[in-house]
Image 1: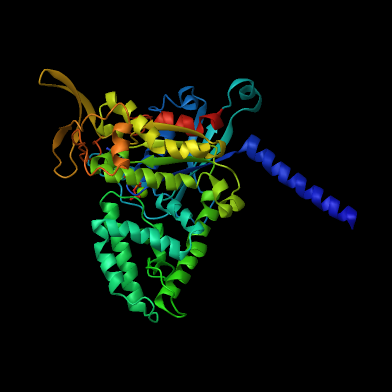
Image 2: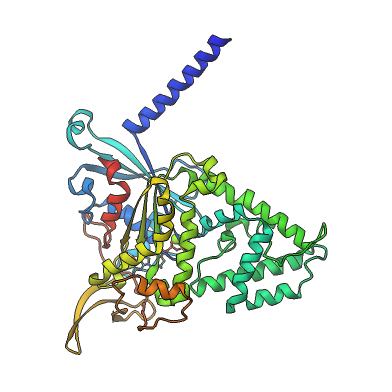
Length: 470
Ligand SMILES: Nc1nc2c(ncn2[C@@H]2O[C@H](COP(=O)(O)OP(=O)(O)OP(=O)(O)O)[C@@H](O)[C@H]2O)c(=O)[nH]1
Ligand SMILES: [Mg+2]
C-alpha cells in the first residue's frame, strides 16, 4: 500500500515536472491580459499590437524584433475552446485601408493566440536553436474587475454605497425617485423587479456617458447572454427588515447569485490565469470631461487595481495560480497631444495609480506608466500663434470628415494641479479647458513589413514581453 502510494506520488511528481520543463524550455506561454474601462482602447490596442508583431518594421523598441531574433510570427488556434476568438482580421480591416473607421465596441471576453518563433540570446541561441513562444492575449472589460469589491460586501452594504452615490448625481434622480415610490417590503413582483433593474442600468449607462467609471454591477452594462436573467435583475434598495418572499429579500438573494455565478467564474476562469497585464486608461478623455470625472476615474482605477493585490481578498488568494508579475498602466490616445506633452500625460497616469501602488506595490509585480497611441491618427505641426510656437496635432475629424488641427490645452507639469482640485470636489478646471476631438483613423496603405502607425507600442511590448523573448 505504502509503496503504491509513494510510487503514485512519484509518478505524478515526474509528470508535473516534465510538463513544467517543457513549458519553460520548449514552448512557454505568456498570457497577456488587456483591460481598461469602456472605450479605453482595448480593441484598437490588441489589433495594432498583433499587426505590429506580425509585421515588425515599426517595432524598434522591442529588442527581439529589432535584433531580428523573432524569425516568424503567426496566428494559431487559441487554447480555450469556449471563449470567443478576438476578431483580429475584422478589426484590422476596419482600421486600415482607404476609408478606415474605428472598430465596434466589444462586449465580452475574447482571446487570440499569436505564436512567435524566437532565437534565444547569447550562448543558448547557438545551442538550442529557435523556440516557439505562445502569446495568448485576453481582452476583458475593466468594469468586471470592479465587481471584485462586491465579493466582500453584502447586499445592504453595497446598496447603501450605491444609493449614496446616486443621490448626489443628477443622473441618479430618476432611480432614487423610482425606489422611493416602490414598496420594497411587498411580495416580489417580477415587473417591478424588472423596472428597478432597468432603472439602475439606465443610471449606470447615464453616469458612464457622463464620464463616471464606478459602475457596479459591472455586468449590467455588458450583459451578453445573461441579459434578462434573474442574476442580472436586481438593484440597490434602502435598508429594511424585509419579510420572507419580499422584493427586498429576493434582491438580496439575486445579488448573492450574481456574485457566485457571474463574478466568481470570471475571476476563476480568466483572471487567475493571467501573467502579464496592461491596463489602458483614457486619461485625456476624463480630463476633458472635468474634475469629477477625473476623480471618479482615479477611484475606479484604485478599485480595478485592488484585483492585483490579492492578499486583500480571500476568494482571490485561494484561486490564484500564477501571479501577475508585470503591469503596465498606459494612458491611451496620446496622438491627441503633441509629443512635447507626452511626458506630462505619463506623469498624470503615474499619479492616478500612485496611491494604490504605494499601498502594496502589487505584491511585488513590476509596474510602469506610459503614454501610448495604439493607432496614430494624427500628424504633428508647429503653428505660430501670437508670436509663440505652438505644437498642434492635425487629423481628419470623425464627424465631418474634414481636416482639423488641435491644441488640446497645456497639461500641467505637476499632476497634482489636476488631481488635487478633482479630489477636493471642484466642478470645473480653473486654468482653462482641455479639448478633445474625435479623429478618424488616418487612411493608410500599410507598407510591406510594417504594421499600423503607433506611438510607443513597441516600448509597451518590450516591457510586457521583452524578458520572455530572450
Ligand atoms: N486617436 C486615437 N483614438 C483611439 C486610439 N485607440 C482608441 N481610440 C478611440 O477610442 C475608441 C475606443 O477604442 P476601442 O479600442 O474600441 O476601446 P475598447 O476599450 O475596446 O472599448 P469597448 O469595447 O467599448 O469596451 C475608438 O473608437 C477610437 O475613437 C488611438 O490610439 N488613437
Ligand atoms: Mg473593445
